[in-house]
Length: 359
Image (cartoon, rainbow, N blue to C red; front, side):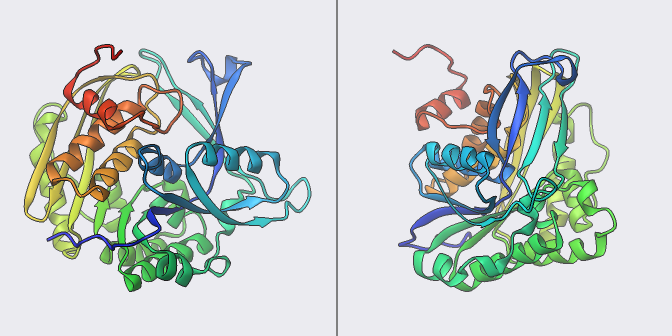
């Protein structure tokens, strides 16, 4: 059975992350032909927190900032506006060639022109995240955390961040905090570091309570055989995805919840969106159905954020995947790559397919 959440905690959800900014052309034009851009603070992990923070749960990012940077101040203000606490060391920039916050430059695509994302991570300050800069006994032992959410993006960002994520997982396990791990494989991060990262990811997965990933994540991070060739379209492959999840469970039997999303791209503006969740011995499936897409980036983070919110609220497991699916669908309707739902009803209306005006 799924473990009970730790009671009397200051924070429902905590994530380590490397914060940056995302710039996107304002009217869905390609980056190289645009001269006006929308800028937002971003990271995959803070995107996950946004759902819970918007709906009233106490959340926090563990990160690091460039001292006296206007971008750092922009990020801190944005986190505050979203109701997300932050804790992190300030690092001296070290001159014009020193540290900075990452830039994510995105073309959302339109119609048959697919999205394109470029990451400019040179000198990224988040690569310096170090366990020595955080009081883990205070965070997990005194303040208390119900769920620690870890992302493979941060675990693989640098040697230091990999050790940081390992130590966070160990501290969480020691103090009874549950661990959610989204594998988030990135080939460029793993190049030349496969042996080191495979060991880190395997240890974190072995102590996780919730394990999330797509077919590539499970294959490339954990060495699990992916889904076998299935039927026509993404719906026809659900049984093969279930088979993959069962192989993950054989390798990591201590995990209570396994989840993966299903996506088939019809165009940049229309996807088939679904999900699979195994909770103990119970399958919960949302068969892919059409959703309109303004900007697809962040939809997967929205799914994880919604699922974790429902999990933290201790709803019945069937609602974990439903709320996650609808939260992901919500994010794809937004210019931001994170969701800030007005209330739970807004998310449930998306699940029910009810887009009628509310007055």
